Length: 211
Image (cartoon, rainbow, N blue to C red):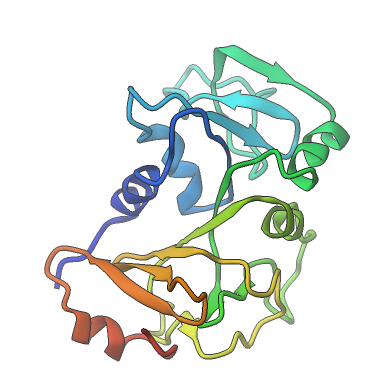
């Protein structure tokens, strides 16, 4: 079995960007997207902590502790970067001004529900901006490993963890494949397979029904 690495998952997600998009990147694999955006694809990355125009991760020794993303990772700024209050940043999100968000998740259901903010019994700092993002952004893409560390499926008939949003996920990109909601939005269908992965293997490792 081959499949995609985390960086390759991010690169596949970057192919969903379009000229002029305003894009929000979640914590985990999504943060890697900033490093693999095609040079000829002008997009603006937004962070809910108040930065518009995020550059790639800085080289070692060039970090600025004052420049961080929502996941508290150091980032770089661009000549076009601008800054705003958290209230203004969330107004962009809630007002429908973000074209695409790429989020991590612990579970996604076959109906497009997403659970990505807490595991009961574990310490949680807060839900962050995920609930606002899935409710206010025009298109939602999830990037994650297809299965948990114990091999259990993360793409399920129904989410077992507390939900972040219902019927909101448009596409899921994992180490095995790309899944996209059908035209009717009822189920996901396999639209692309990672190298060395078969459709039968994807189905065997997925609890959700696939179109």
